[in-house]
Image (cartoon, rainbow, N blue to C red; front, side, top):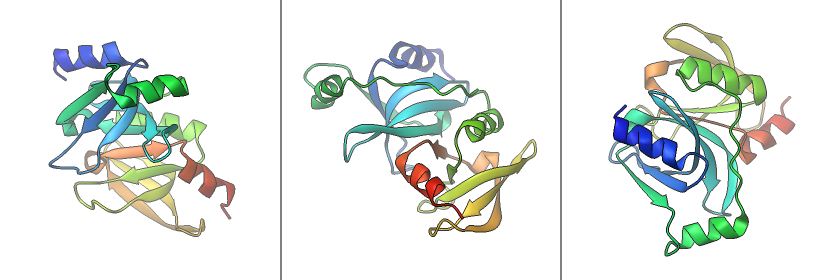
Length: 178
């Protein structure tokens, strides 16, 4: 990671609302508060723009970030709204050194995780629990949209682009798991 970007992440950690743009490779932008980062991953307390609340966490790859916007000036409505809401980002106790350590830590504290391979399958989301990991792969016991357990899925860590946990969707599914 470039030292200028590392300094930016350190300066904004837990303080400034930030949005990462991963286009053209990945069309979805990710916004929230940086609460942790390593050499390859960023951990964010994620912002849900639709209702303007902090809604769970996500891990994204630093290598996918193409641009960013920091909403720290009073002229930004986003900055004013965040101040009005008195957001207090919280960092979960997980290591972000590698996908493996981050996923293991998240799985210990959160019942379900969402996995995305946005470059391979842009509109596909897997929800479930990690059941096995090797140095290069992750196996997830999946849930279908009816919160019923389904077949395991295997991923290469190099294909993962985003992992989410602790949000409303995952929490609702966890409450109704069979």
